[in-house]
Image (cartoon, rainbow, N blue to C red; front, side):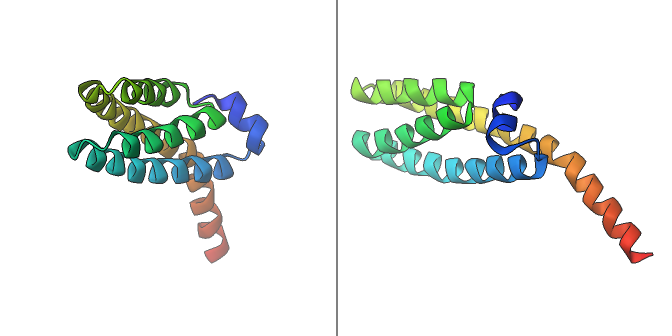
Length: 123
């Protein structure tokens, strides 16, 4: 993700940024499950709608790799290229896992600070 874009959108509050990105990851996992189901039954239009949602949200958040992959998947669906869509679906899953790890790292300083405050308040 583009840290400067997140800072501009949500301030430099890493907790808020982490929560927004974690929500995106969860929603995108659901969308990817829906895409897998749609591709299994060759429902190209259903897959395209979900791919477009991922494209739109990743564009808004500045998530370049996910935007590129989901955009390519939308394009493949317009071309009725289900094999390309399946490959791109797998790539989207991998990219989402990378983002999920990055979100966890983004939240770590905040989690550490929260634990420290909890410990101090218990004394």
